[in-house]
Image 1 (cartoon, one colour):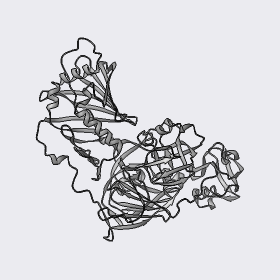
Image 2 (spheres, rainbow, N blue to C red):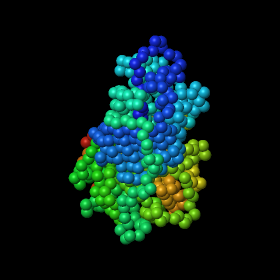
Image 3 (cartoon, rainbow, N blue to C red):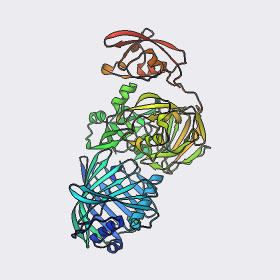
Image 4 (cartoon, rainbow, N blue to C red):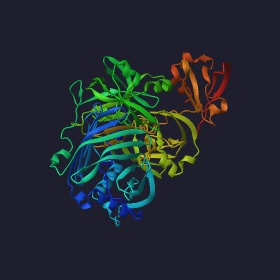
Length: 615
C-alpha cells in the first residue's frame, strides 16, 4: 500500500514581497523561493528536523511522526489504528516495517534509484545549474486555484521521475507540487504557513494520488528543528516479527496443495471453519473475502482504492483472528477485505475464503513443488539450502519477488514472480514501447483483482528463466492501458503458473532470493485449450459462454456470448463434474468433436465443436 508512505513536500515557504517582473530563469525562481524561506544558507544549516501531526485517508485517521538528520537519515511512523507503517533510512540502507510488523530491507533497483535521487535533492544539487543529475526548466506561468504561479519542472538522469512545483509569482510560496513516478502521481496543495525558527513551512497539505484516486490530508501539529536525535532511531529493528508456530514444534512442515485452474489452494481454518484459500506471491497483503469476513463478524475499516492487476479495487481492513494452515498456527493479523469469492465461483465453481499473500509467505522459506503439488514451509532461522538449483537474486518490490527473464532472446528485463497469476503477461508500457501490441494474437477475457480484463494472447518461441528454456509459451498482451500493477513501466511483465509448473521454486524472503530447480514435469506438454471458448457461471448458475475468441473453433462453430450450455454429446451438463470438467473436454487432442446443445434467446440449438490448435 504505497499510499501509506508516499508523503512528500513536508517543507514549503512563503514571502511577503512581490516580484516586480516575471522571471525567465528557473534557478532565479528557486533562489527567490529559498530567499523567501529565510535564506538558503539557513535552510542548509538545519541538521535535524522532527514533526508530529495527524493524517487522514479513505475513512482512516491517525497520527504521523517524522525524524530527519540531513542529508541521509530519516524515519517516519504512521499509525491509523488498523494500519501501521514505519519506514526508515540510516544512511546506508532503507527499510520498512509493515502493518503486521514485518521488516523488509529495500533492495529493488527502482527504489534504490529513487532513494539516490532523493538524497541528491536533499543535498540541494538540483539548485546547481551545472548539475550532471538534475535538469530544471521553467515551464511558464499557470494559475493554481486562481493564483498565478511559476511552474518549475525538475527531472533527473537517474530515473524517469520528475517533480513540478508551482510558486506564487508574487510571494514565491509553493502553492502546489506534482511528484510523478512511472505509474502514479501525487498532487499536493499547501496552506497554513507558520514560522519555525525563522523558516516558513506549510502545516496543512491536501494530497491526491492518481491515476487511482485517493485523497489524503496531513496536518502538522508540532514542528521542531535543531533537536538531538538518537542515531539508533534510524536503524531497522534488531528483532523481526514471529507470529507463527509449527504445530509439532519443528522447523518446517509439508502442506499439500490443490492445483486447480492454474491456481494453488490450501485449507485455512478460522474459528473452526475451514475454507480454501489461494496462495499468492503477488498479493502485497493477505486478503479475506468480504462476505466471509462478514460471516465471521469481522469489523472492516476504511475505504481505500488499491491497485489490482489491471484495475482499481475497493479495499478495507480488518483484524483477522488466529488461524491455522495444516501444521502451522498463526496469531491475528491485519488483512485486506475485498470481494474475492464471487470471481472464483463464477469462473471456476470454487468457494474460497481469501488469499494468503505476503503477510503469510514472508514468514517462511517456501518450497513449491508443482509436479507433486506440495508446499514445504521452513523456518528461515534454521533453513539451509542443499540442492543444486539456480539461485536468483530477486529483490522484493512491494512484497513481490522480481527476477530477470528473457523472451525470444530479445525481450529481457525484470519480471514479477506471481504465483497468484495463471499465466505470464507483458506489462502495457513494455509491450507498447517494443511493438508487441501489434502481434498476431487471440482476443480473450481475463480476471484479476479489480474484475474483468480484456486481453490478447500470443504464442512466442521461447522464454528463458534461471538458465532454463521453455518452448512455445503463450503470453498475454494488454489491449488497453491498465490502471493497476500491470501499468508499471519499471517491470517488464508478470510471470505466472503456466511457467512455474515446470519447476520447483524455493522462495526465500529473508535473503530476497528465488531458487529454481527442474521439476518432475519440466518440459512437459501440458494440455491447452483448443476451443477458444470461455465459460463461466451465469445467473442461476447456468454454464454460459463468456467469450468465443475470433478465428477459433468456438467462433467458427457459431457460439455467441450468452449462450447457455445444456448438453454435451446428448449428456446434460449437470451430469458432468462442474464447469472445470467442461474445460477439460476442450483440452483433448485436435480433431476431437463434440455436439454441444445450447439455449439461445429461449430456443434450443445444437452446435458441432471440433478442436484444433489455436496457434
